[in-house]
Amino acid sequence: MRFHAWATVAVVALGLWLPLSRHDWAVLALAIGAVWTAEMLNTALETLVNLVSPDYHPLAGRVKDIAAGAVLLMGIAAAAVGLLILGPPLWAAVQQWW
Ligand SMILES: Nc1ncnc2c1ncn2[C@@H]1O[C@H](COP(=O)(O)OP(=O)(O)OP(=O)(O)O)[C@@H](O)[C@H]1O
Image (cartoon, rainbow, N blue to C red; front, side, top):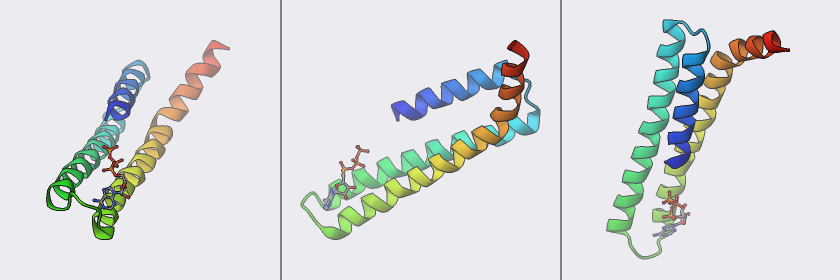
């Protein structure tokens, strides 16, 4: 959660600094929202599993692993979106400096 919060702040700050279109912002907002949604659903599932299966059970572990995998998958996809949208204008800004 803390990592996602810092990543969100960094992406929004970079986005405000770089010349982004409304379409770029819409895609970034969707990616950020999707990561937070996946993280919250993962936390909800973890809490639910802890409630219904506090003792060790292979299925409980499987549910947690799949939910954590969904967060990882969404994080990778969001990182790709961030690179595709922020990468080119960031590269142009770096080239202007040097
Ligand atoms: N009740 C359980 N039965 C079997 N395996 C479990 C159980 N609880 C957790 N595990 C295994 O241990 C791993 C870590 O569980 P934990 O509850 O700490 O989740 P976490 O993703 O590390 O939580 P957090 O996001 O809070 O760091 C799970 O991915 C799962 O493989």
